[in-house]
Amino acid sequence: MRQLVVLCSFLAPVALARAQPADAPAAPVEDEGDPPEADAEEAPLRFDLNAEYRFRAQLNRDYRLPGEGDVPGRLGQGVHGLQWLRLTGRMFVEERFELVGQMDLFDGVLLGDAAEAIEADGGVRDDRDPLGRDAFDPRWLYVDGETPFARLRAGLVPSHWGLGLLANDGTHERPFREYRFGNRNVRFELDAPLGPEHLPLRAMVALDLVYSDPFAELRDGQRALQAVTALSWDGGEHRCAGIYYVFRRQREDAPDEALESDDFRVHQLDVFFDVGTEDPSGARVYLAAEGVMTWGRTAYANEGGIPDGRFVRTPADVRQGLFAAQIGREGERAHAVFEMGWASGGDPRDPNVEGRGGMHPDHVVGLILFPELLAFGTARAASLPQAQALGRLAPPGTRYAASRGGVTGATYLFPHATVPLAEWLELRLGWVWARATSDLVDPHRQRARGGDRNFQGGSPLPRDLGWEADAALRARWQRDRYELTGGIEGGVAVPGRAFDDGAGARLPPVGLVRFRAGARF
Image (cartoon, rainbow, N blue to C red):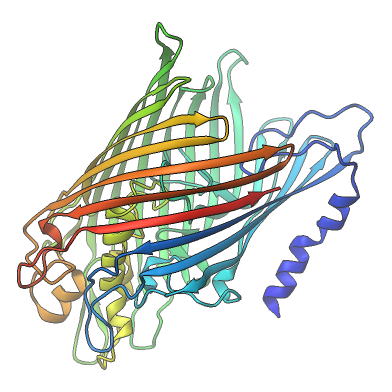
């Protein structure tokens, strides 16, 4: 009933939107800039509603994952279909203020198999209930407008910066797969220009209560507060740079009286630039890079049980780094990019330092190695303590072992290209090579059994993650505000020795095919 009330309240402006003239200006779903200009005689209030529906059918080999007790040693999912509906409503007030709301509906497994014991992943691959809690997900509800001194944003606001390694709003397309999560904060933000108009320099300050990001879910009792400031220069496409700073404090509700609640405090510094020029043929050549440094203290990294059922938490230093760079060429015949990235690994055996860094899950790299094998391998390891009947509680920090599909504790190469075949059809090709930046130690096995094993139960010493080759055909038909999309994408991954099991057996090659269909209006 609560979900129905939320849905009805969100859709209340729809009738008003449909009552407006058919030619009323509309803002695209993913456009977060200034509202379109209006004629002087236009009404002071305008409404707009956009909807996007997606269906994805996937066939993949049901590969090996760690299993114990009633949990099988496989993913448990070979064929499945996912659906997703996103509604975005906007109300413009005299072209000075904009009220924006967005909600995801009916997100989950529509048909086929559901994966088992991967709750820590945070996605919907294990959810067969299209009307469950995650099927009604409020994403945005904020006001955006100009004041005499600064641009103001307040409410449930998306957050994005640079290439999206740290802050990613979940609306930026990647070569393969698609965005899923997105940072959302209950935010009060002021963004003001510095200097004259010909110098596009801006300063931003914001205060956040994190609603949802890779490290906190307010609905699950993880309360994170942030203070954010940024200085940016934006001279247009491939002419921007900036520096972004975050101070974050997070506390977690104790899930049981036998658990203690604690917090962590971290500082994050993010530097980004994107510069480009035209080559003699008229194509755009550019270089973009982003680097993130995180430091502070955490009480979630090191947790061990003691006889009375409580957990001892030893605070650890946080020292993590992320880096990604893209060299690209955008021409009429192709858009080619050579991307490389690095996420620190640290020493998983050092209880005094947490050095394993992870990129945002919406910065998707490839189809299989990171979004499938590592995502669900780490999710299974993080979910096993809750899934087993072990007669003891699981440390709440265990869930942080799940990468959720982001590049975590690894370095990678990711060249990819997009080639237009027709006005409505394009071909995408990509290749991924990856290697871990530290030994792969499963934290659950390390705590439960006192030994160092990887997520498959094998030796943690091999760091070769393997390689994959990917391809996709994407079709898009558009007329006025209506758009139909379709396509197929697939790949084959050859896992490296980092996926060997306890007997030294290699993980066989993993293939995957995904069929895509969607509509936007």
